[in-house]
Image 1 (cartoon, one colour):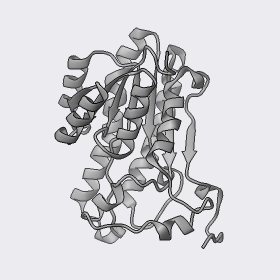
Image 2: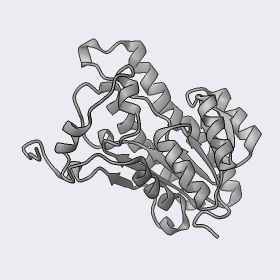
Image 3: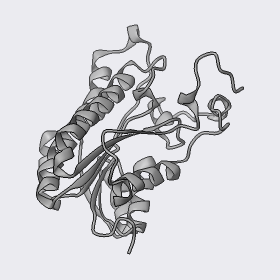
Image 4: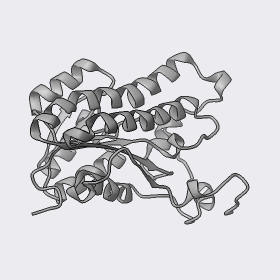
Length: 249
């Protein structure tokens, strides 16, 4: 028996990075896992490796969520992990780029929560884990759209937690700091990113690993977190404990 035995989990953005790390841990803890992504080749390959299921799911599309629920039935754990990052100064941020980030990060989270709630209530309970960011707690330059989306996820999490608390559905947000997942290179057009400079600015003097965030997500999916809802769980190496006058270089 694993920590997630009897749980049926859907993880978005599960083909790579943080989502893939969570999928591996969920399977190891005996959950029945549905991997959801738009990267079909990587998603199917990982699902085959883990003996899990895969579904093509563009989280920003209402019809895709309906199809996923129809194909795989009610889930008792949802990890809203899919997300994109866009760098640009405010005055150079194109509306199309802003809307893309909001549609995937924010609207995708909203649609996911809405899609799974009826099944969770019918099943007698569940856990929704919304992946926000430290940018959902404080701002960073060049990240107007991303920060807006991650603050919104933080707020939606609390509303949903209050509405669903009496129905045994828990809703929490996870706020990673800089994690080596490949999200940064993708946002920068595929160019390599040296994270050593960022690591010097983290109190723990290193960036995070996807597997470390996955452990936190497993805890929130499990019954070990049965009294946790509407909360923010931060894993950032101490970054948000500091203020702008602090120096770790």
